[in-house]
Length: 337
Image (cartoon, rainbow, N blue to C red):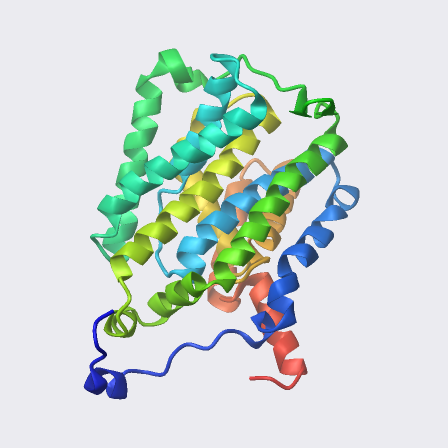
């Protein structure tokens, strides 16, 4: 690490403080508490299939939140990692006959490699240019999948694979049962959330938050900002790839739309509605958006217009999102700033 410039440090703004609610014991228990909250979800929603979707898209938003909410990088191309995870899983199972767990591992690795390639190009730009570069590169992945119809099915999507049971050795679970499928997916999501909690509690988690708050000061403190951004980008892609793999197993098909820009937009909407920069917020956002979409689609074919209006209202009047606002009010009630 290079010696610190005392003049820079003296004139730099104060270091960002962690939320009081994220300190101490709560930060250590946030993953178990989140999993306990998700255990009751299939018994509260109208269908278990909707509950599985909340888990999968919530994990997708968690991966996106690591890059946007904690690192401060706005990406419009995360569908590339979600769709890659889904396609690699479907191809590995349907074409090569791999075990579902091996297919999931391969899908996560493929999403990570793609994130490394896209991130290495994207982090050279900043602000809106970063967002546009990620969008452009994700569209290249979409076009490549469209053209490789022999592998991906083209416009019709990838079909012809079904996972009826998943497990190791004598222990196997019938995931054709919706409730069993929910808890199998929850096991993967719970492991991912535990890993995410560990990442955020590590020194790396403090560094990415410092970059989000003041990149110049973080650089002056001797941190390798570009390398940290790239690592955050790759980790984000890994989580999104896992979500895509679970999505493929859940539906037994992979639509081409899983790589489309509107899928990238869903990650942005869910993260903002739930609360960017909060641990459980992405799941709250996924729950709110999917339940609202399910209800509005029964009333009007123009449900996307209504959903867009709700999103605009959140951005204007509830910028912290549902979960972020709840945490802020709880902190106020406890007499904390």
